[in-house]
Length: 380
Image 1 (spheres, rainbow, N blue to C red):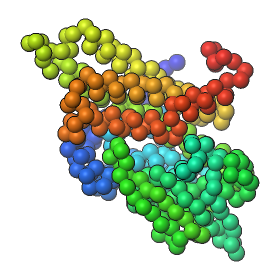
Image 2: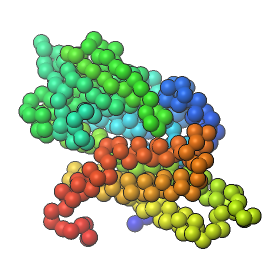
Image 3: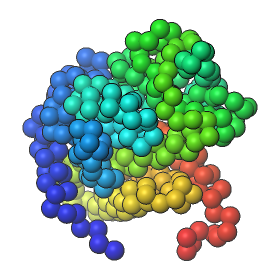
Image 4: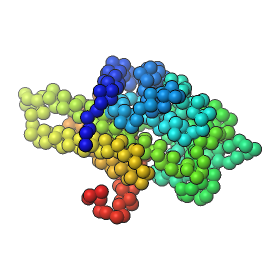
């Protein structure tokens, strides 16, 4: 199989890498985190690069690129531990609108997302769901031809600043039924919407969002809503895997540079054999994570059963890799690794949050196991 990137993909990677190095240095990131965890200015700069329209069809003002280009961008944003929720808006929510929304909704929102003028995010997490997408207690009902949504969603990316939300809400069935879940668009400024924003552990921003009979627009009906939600979350997982690869690669480079600079007994500590073995193990975990990130991205176009198993397999490996690389990097740095003034601890925090996002390692290990009924998985 050919894993070489095209010239166009390499140019895209180079453009994003240069922007991160030039315009998203560590000190600027620290300033953004202290200011609340989201910068409209940085968001506008990414839009000027064309990144917001990456996955949006050309007919709606985007570039019409696919999963591999998205993976390339996410790796480079991971290198800079960019706190702005690029994937949540440009890949996940925009993807739902592009693939499933009525044409009128697409025309209203997609060009604005591509231009960086509108933030639309997926608001799906509920307090008792425990990563189970079919657990939906938020409800939706029709009132004289108008859909209305009631319920609460947690850890919504930039939820107190987003312009609209893609909200899974139950139209029928029990709390844990896969059927009966619809996806609706709710604007933040609509009546009945309240938000409470807060910073996240990795420096980003999220919010608790409550809907009280908020007016909404139907995107996907209850017959296909759960499948569309699974698809959106799988895109988010693949994007997170790619971001983790970029973050691990940069953290690995920072760690190696430190080992070659820090001296003990008059020599760089990177010459100590025991530490070199640990660096070799970090590199191995990084490459295992990279290969599974590629695997998840390439499987996004497969049928839902194979796609879901592939992204869970990738999430298991990336979870193990992120934890190992992050912990070893902090250990090899010593006390400086956990200080706020030094970059290594910030990579570790981001990797930790990525490991817990959209299902932690243990959850996805269970998902992989549940999908291996016909084989032990050795040749699957």
